[in-house]
Image 1 (cartoon, one colour):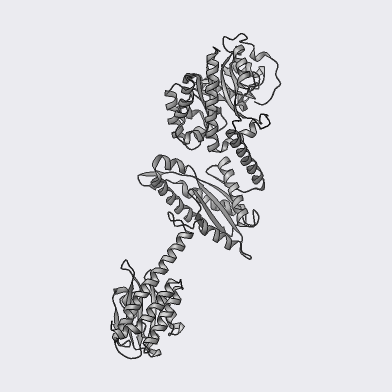
Image 2 (spheres, rainbow, N blue to C red):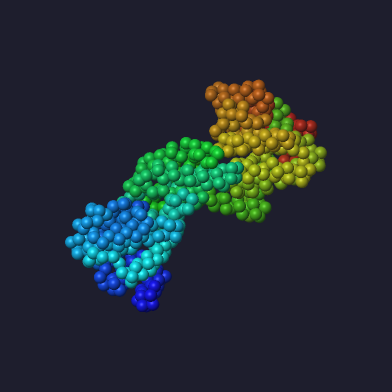
Length: 620
């Protein structure tokens, strides 16, 4: 560049770079360049076009009529698309000295010839990766080529345009990343907040909100790795996005999505969309070497009816989702006003139990398991109880609500294992006739994969042989979606000498056919069947069938919730050997249980008299 040309161009360069650095919008930078260039070269008309997805987009053409600028906007690049479209297609400068006769301009000369523009020189603007990102063009009012000054101006301005376009791309990418999830490409929490805010503006139409949770994603991450988990998230996200249309899907966190449904003014609209999503996600998803079937659980709210601001809507949708996980996993639950109170109460209970766990106010109570023919105690079931700060034992039903929290249930099991191991050690040291104690475990205990080691550590520390331990597993734990994991863990524990009892049999998901698939030593028949055992009806027939089948499979039976002598006699006549319930004893502290074992255990001084004291009938 000659010194004279450099002196002319340098101020333009500095002004443009300052505008770019200060964050001036791209269109304003492009207009600035065009106007300053036209001042330096008064015989030219300057235009800057961007190339987006193979189409020309007008950035700046301040000296052309607006209708002409609009005519070039959206034109596809190609081999005969004027100077700019052809230069972008070829990736090289295109000089046309006579627009009227040149075939490149055959379809477009009528736009510029009436303006007195007879020639055009267009140069491509390149991105760092070699893509053509735009064009910088001069139009002339004479049939000529560019002079030396104009060539220097174009070289410098094409470079400035490349900087400005990259800056715009970076800004757009940063904006996209700020409002969109990198893994799925869906709007993230910030994008969701912006969209729900727009829909809540005055005068907007009714809409609904679904919150969606991927079931058991943690198990996939833990067993197959986070790469497989990420592939599953991407697959689920794509299906949610497609099934939710015309609703808008967002990813809020690791396993949680949201869908905004415009026009959904009632629960029916929510349910229709939710059912499409549930059905779409259910088919197996290819995740590398694996094909994984998955489920989602959904809660939903209707704007206006279930809340008039974003925070309330989100909270109520959370309540609905929370309730769906508890009562209808893999399904949809709409928000109802009573949910807020019920779930708030449950969360308060969870907090109270968490505090009691930290303050060592969680105690082990025990309920005897007896022989129905002699009423001798042959074992115990350990039951967790919570003492208030005032020393009162909290109602067991209230306490049980906290077990829905897997983290808390895991901590409670750890405390119970330690308490039970210490109590069993004391009974063995005292020479009390004692066979076994049942310890309840939850899904949360299996999820971390360390239940076997926790049991070994607790009982080995106290020197208690594992033959004294029965693992009591609820049906919902066996069948609640992680059955293979639970079955494998249970089989390993049985190999250590523990017995396994299937608790509350008949009330959950299991059936008699599942007894062939899961390693079970004991079935505990739920109280709901025992309640009607003295009447000849379906309940009695079912209990009889369970007892007969279990006997043939060498599985022991324990009847739960026995409250009357008539029930005990009926069960005994049907072949049931063992039972527990208020007819024999209520759950009691270790001290009271020690006395009961001393007197009524097999070989105890009062063996055979435990069930003969009159007791008030109550639900157990």
